[in-house]
Length: 249
Ligand SMILES: NC(=O)c1ccc[n+]([C@@H]2O[C@H](COP(=O)([O-])OP(=O)(O)OC[C@H]3O[C@@H](n4cnc5c(N)ncnc54)[C@H](OP(=O)(O)O)[C@@H]3O)[C@@H](O)[C@H]2O)c1
Image 1 (cartoon, protein in one colour):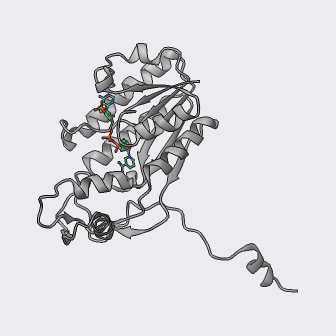
Image 2 (cartoon, rainbow, N blue to C red):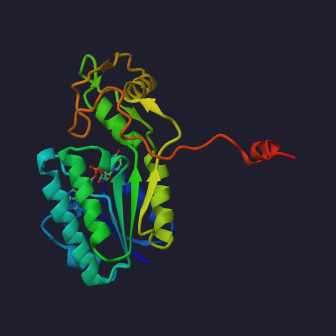
């Protein structure tokens, strides 16, 4: 089976690419550094020839400001879907963000637009929404080791390891298209300052994290303690046996 991974050289895409490669799939990484550009369409037709599945893990490149996210995701996703249709792709899998429809910002509206295009394109699809990956948090928190005190917003998150997310995506590829959503999250609910502090202590970085309610996350200022980026599932506590014990005799 041939799988094209748009953004397959990125933080998450590269792990998905490795997971699928290890499982024996024929993987083509489609990203600008590989001469394939979803925004301009450069190289898409050649990359997509004979493809069965497309996985979209593209992200807004650093050179494009958040204010242009809607236009970036709109144009690039439309180009991927058109190339997929022309090549007879049987499954379009989009990587999106948990809480995407609860945040009104350029970046999240861009991701909403991307999801809508995928839902409406008429072909088989799956949308995997993930919480923040630990690798992205460690990147953003520890980017500037020169800062006297890293400033982070007081967001509540349930971060996931990129390799766990990659495994879910690989399993989704192997299954029939979901024609709907799957949400992925890590096992712990934590504040971003707590995650940042733990990451820094693990590298003997003794700086103190400053909680800054004006600091942006993905180009947005969130409310202090905001939980909009947590997954929606709530799990009850009563097991089958506990429920049976309470049944009237
Ligand atoms: N990071 C997170 O915590 C997180 C959580 C949930 C969902 N997501 C979603 O996952 C996706 C990937 O995130 P990430 O953190 O892995 O991003 P990333 O590390 O910034 O990687 C982005 C990838 O997109 C590629 N790209 C940029 N412009 C492109 C274009 N015009 N055509 C084709 N490819 C292009 C880049 O290509 P080059 O390498 O060639 O520059 C890169 O490979 C995003 O859509 C994001 O919303 C991320």
